[in-house]
Length: 364
Image (tube, rainbow, N blue to C red; front, side, top):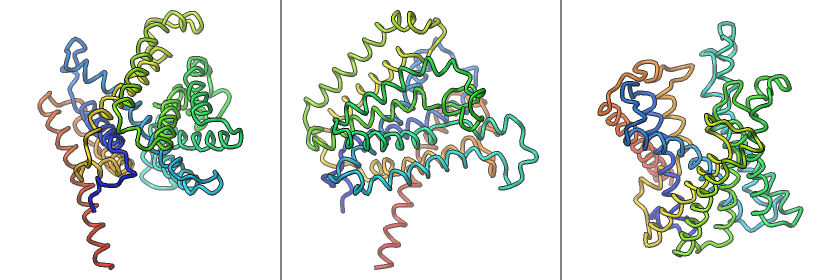
């Protein structure tokens, strides 16, 4: 069976999933290995890479929300009868569990006698997997509220996503460690070492759910150029709004020039994600099927994410390239290693798929 022929599979989402995870792989690889001598903000190449690196996480999170909600709403059943509810809850537990496992502070399961305070901070820090897991949980809750209130998905989801964005400047100034234990406080701000706390990052996952719900209810819309145009217009509007919002948020939040993560940047990121979606959806209009390896990459984003992190950053049970070669490569060695890493991840999912197919053939 041709993997690209599934009529229920939106081609441009497969492309977005593959693009997002491969951007994550190359971004992490270059960040780990490239020497500080070559990190010149004045270089157009490095500044372009740095900009895209800042957009990778929003793309990854937005796509996760889009895919989950698309699959959820593609099943036309009441909330209590929708199998995607249980699958989503299992996905939530898996993602959060893997997130903590990757940051596990000890090579032994129960011996924590040698763990430093920094080690505990790393373990309790909220990263991408925790964030997407809780984002999916919030999407499920929003879907339940939408059904019970009989309101449209876009109303509930948009309100939830915007709330996570707007509350961020306020929540970021609260010392949550004085209110909650460290392992809970990390979900609200970066003060305990979290990289992706719920505020504002869960907003990207939830906003992706808005698009996923729309695609599920309009299954052929992605085949029209009008859909790409609408995404582009909304994306451009948000980017323009991001520049106009600076004086407003400065008035309400007292924003300083040095701040980089407030509402203007959030609007810029959402707008850029929508522009990228518009471009890829437009390219995908005439594509009837995708190469097998692209679909396999898109279907195995979690596996690729976990394996490449273990190779680059290591874990409690293995050293990573970060410990061996941290920021010691020149440009060409770094680029070459990034290409090797992408090739390895691609080969991994292709081989695993072939082994699965072979096992099925032997069983039958």
